Amino acid sequence: MMADPHDTRTPKDATPDPLPSSASRRRGRRWRAFLIWTVGLFALATAIYLLAREVSSSSWGDKVSVGAMTVHYPSHVARNSAEALARFLYDKGIGRINDADARLRHESGIWTVDLFIPQQENTDTDIFSALLERMHRDIARDVLHGEALVLRACHPEVGANSIQQRGDPKAWKEIGP
Image (cartoon, rainbow, N blue to C red; front, side):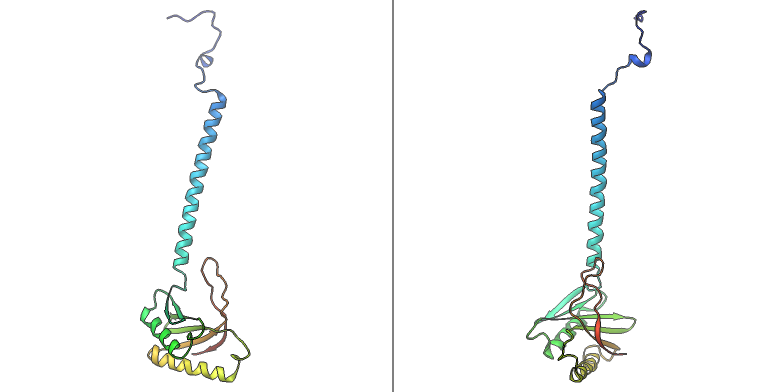
């Protein structure tokens, strides 16, 4: 087949565009939207995973309850220690009438018990301080078998700390080493 001598088209013009320009633009927009959607979905899934991992590994960890007395403890503290503390506090009358919370931690060889008690007129007395000192002595002796203990009376309103469920409590009275 011979080329037409009257055809003035160049070889570039001779090959027609497979898609009209508007269809080509639509295909490009769809592809970009798909990529943006995929990257966004991956970023959202990653953020949810990281958030769930951070919350589950928060310093508050698990909890154990005896009556209305709840003791929160991290994963590296034995459950039986938290149960013994909850039982001790419940036997002393804490958590029998109203819900009560405490947190048990063990860091650098020192146990820390945070009792969540609001600072009020009736708790800011010498009698209450003596009660806390007796509790400190009895918990160290009976629950923790003579190990070092810091007993802290803390405000019950503990705010959030970044992504954790609860932040570190602020103590208004501290007894211990």
